[in-house]
Image (cartoon, rainbow, N blue to C red; front, side):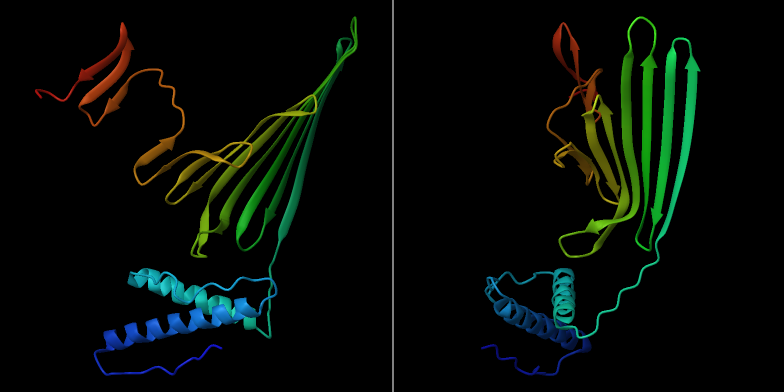
Length: 239
């Protein structure tokens, strides 16, 4: 059984009363969330004695998330409305001669709603050689640009940015499948398995493997390059 006690005020400044109200709402949201999870079929209730946010920002986010989940799960009325715009553009190039036929087809589909704009690109090239032997090959590329909302972070806040992806196909087999994502605080690169293989964030570069064609300078004081072997050079003046 979940018992929700009324708030208790003990005076204090407006700031202290506000902090007490935030703490009360957070505890109440936790209790109600636990009650809903317990009533949900197959759900494992989380203990009420979990981690308590330590900073005012974490506490505010926890209170917001808890009350948001409570409202959504207990809502009697849900309204959703969205305007979607879609446009498809296409182009064809065809060249024929005694040597064969070359065809190039391109298309772009633009989809836009209140959260994001997505551009889908298709590019197909086909070649038929009619000389000594019939040569037939088709190459296809698909790419997309997505700008706007790319999802949500761990706190449920929307993440805005730009995502670029491309797939190349040769003889029916994919030979290139990767994408990159750029947000306000992170530049990430993903492989064909959606694994983040490298990213730049908080003035740091994280990468599994690196190949440097020239020299590597560190802090304006050291330089590493290849000479007659591996050379470590001090460049910051007198040590």
